[in-house]
Image 1 (tube, one colour):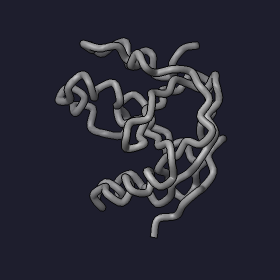
Image 2 (image 1 turned 90 degrees about the horizontal axis):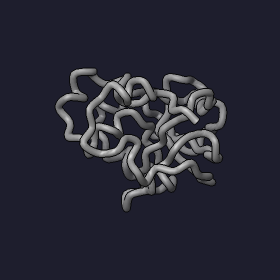
Image 3 (image 1 turned 90 degrees about the vertical axis):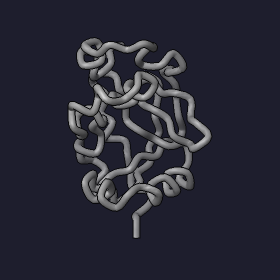
Length: 142
């Protein structure tokens, strides 16, 4: 299946594979993502290469550049809450992160990397995936 942002990834120069070679099409029973109060809003599912300054992509080393084309997700609610609470307030406000939403990611939706110790993993959507349609609120930030 073709990645949603295949063309944008293909137009970049990487010294490593992108998506990373540990990214697989797999089922993840509980994936957590920072969202606004409306998890069905597609703006919650834009990768950083769209939402951040485009010039930033050229200032990041290749080991992290590929992640800009993925959606950041977490393997547990506790780890997602810990990361959200560690973000600077200006980033939380800019991105509209008021909630953490949860979904089951099934095979055929995209490629996921193996979660890091922090619980973070990258999710590269396939074309035609309605990622916004599967997330539900799991946590509201105070």
